[in-house]
Amino acid sequence: MSPSAMRFGLVLPLFLALTPGAIAGQDPGRRVEVFAGAGLARMGGDEGSLGTGPGIVAGFGYGLSARLRLEIELIRARHERDIAGGPLEGTVTSGTANLAYTRTRGRTRIFVSAGAGILSSRTTHTFPSGGENVTVKSSDDDFAWGAGGGVDIFLKRRLSLRPAFRWVTSEATGVMGLIVATVTAGYHW
Image 1 (cartoon, helix red, strand yellow):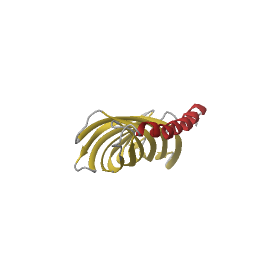
Image 2 (tube, one colour; image 1 turned 45 degrees about the vertical axis):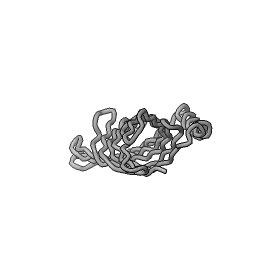
Image 3 (tube, rainbow, N blue to C red; image 1 turned 120 degrees about the vertical axis):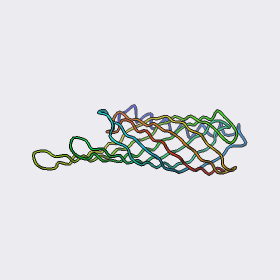
Image 4 (cartoon, rainbow, N blue to C red; image 1 turned 30 degrees about the vertical axis):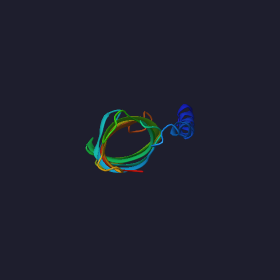
């Protein structure tokens, strides 16, 4: 991890830890939420698509104000693609702290978010070479950033359904871009 990414990785959590106390007092209706769901993920690298596969997402959020919340989110996705005569398979795990801004109120709330965290990529590529199968494995972990958006649809006062889109990227890992479309269920209190 580069020194600047390391500094940012230390400063961001400190900022996020100190900010809620000052902001949360402005909104008596702050809420905590937990969410989990599944969807489809597509990974891309510097040479194009690394494949598509299932993805899961889980996390929790804390309302900083009526329109702003902090979310801690984990994404895990698999990808697979035939390339150079053999399968390229892998998993990617992303853990991010995001700030989400909600513009609308009511039962349907549109939001956008952005954040930073860690992206971890594991890949295995098996291909024929000289009459034998050769397997190459890689493992990369690095600082990542991303953005996304979606809609919180409140089915009941405490229960929501959330179709969402998230893009996470890291230039140092084997997976330079992760795009995930998910539908999650959320519980709010």
